[in-house]
Image (cartoon, rainbow, N blue to C red; front, side):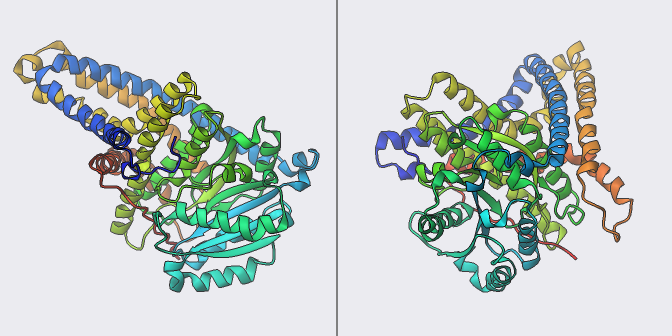
Length: 507
C-alpha cells in the first residue's frame, strides 16, 4: 500500500503508475460514455433506451421517497439530540475528566467578523474550557490580510482555554498542495510538538476536531462528542461526524446559493442514516492517537476531509468506521460581494467537492495492494464510492434529457409507437410524484432557518419556495456540470489544486 500517494505522478514503478493512471481515467470515461451512449442509443435503439428510461426514472422515484423518509428521521433525531444534556451523561462515565479536545481552525483570508463568530461560539461551549486546546493555523502567504484578525482573536479568546496556539503555515513547502489539508497537517504537528508532548497528555485522551474558520459550534457539541467517544466500541477505529448546517448567513445568500446550501445540509443529514456508507466531510472528529498512527493528514490532496477517512480505513485493513453524531454545527452558505461572483463561487465549490472523485484511484489502487481487507468490504465500499460519483455526474442529465431524446432522435418509426406516445407522460408523472421529496425538503427548510432579520420581509419565504422549485433545473449547471468538469480534469491528468471558498458576511 501507499497511503501518501496523490496522483499517478507520485509512483516511480512504471506498471503501478500505469495502473493508477488507468484508475484516474476510469470515472470520467464511464460518465462520458454513459452520456454518449444515451444519445447514440436514443438514435439507434430508441425502444431499448425508452425501457431504460422507465426503469431509471422508477429507480429515482423510489430513491426520492427513500431519501425523504431518511431526511425526516435524521431531522427528528437531531432535534432530540439538541435537547439532551450530554454533559450530565458524560459526567456519569468514569475518568471523563481526562479527555481533552483539540480544536483545529484553519484561516486563509476570512474577515474578522466571521472568525470572531466562530470563536465566540467556541467560548460558549458547555464543556470545561480547561480541557480545550485551540490551534488557529493561518496562512503565512496571507499574513498581511489576516494578522489583525489573528491578533484580535488571540487577545479576546486566548486566555479562555487550556492552551491557545497560533501557527503560520509557510507557503511553498515541498510536496504540498496549498490549502486546508496541508494547513491542518502543519497545525497537527505543531500542536503535538509544542503542546501535547510538552504537557505529556496521552494521545488516546485527546479528541481532535477539524473546523473551517466559519464553523459556529452549537453549545453541546463537545459534550455530545465526548459521550459518543467514551461509549464507542472502538474509539480509536472511529471518526465522528456531526451534521453541517450551511445556515450561518442563509438570509444573505442569493438565489441558487441558498437552495444549494440547504440541499447540501439535507444530503449530509440523510447520510447520517446510512452509517455503513458514511465518510467524513467538512467538520469531523477522531482520536488524536489514530491521527498520529496514520501519519497525520495528507498534505498533497484537495479532498483532505474524506482522504483522512480512507487513510485510516486502509491503515487498519478495513477496521474503521464513521459514527454519525445527530448534532449540528453551523457553517456559511456561499456568498460573495456580487450575485455573479456568488454563482461562479457556487460552481467552483461544487467542482472542488466533486474532485473527491480522486478518491477512486487512491482507494481502488490500495484495495488491489491490500490483501487483508475482506473482498466483501472492498466490493461494498468500492461500488458505493464509484456509483455516487457516477450518479453525481450523470443522473440529473439523464433524468432531464432521456424523457424526450428517443422521440427527438428515434425517427418516425419509433415516434408512431405506443411507447413513444406514453414515454413523456409516464416519466413526467413519475417525476411529479417524486416531487414529494422536494416538497418535504421545502417543509423542513423552514424549521432549519435561523431567525429572520428585521430588515428582511416575509415575502422572502415565497422566494425560498420558488428557489426550491427551480432547483432541479439548476442542478444541471451547478451539480452535473461541475462534477463532469472535475472528472474530466482528473481523466486528462490536469490535476486540480485547492480553491478556498470566499467568505463574505454582508451587513
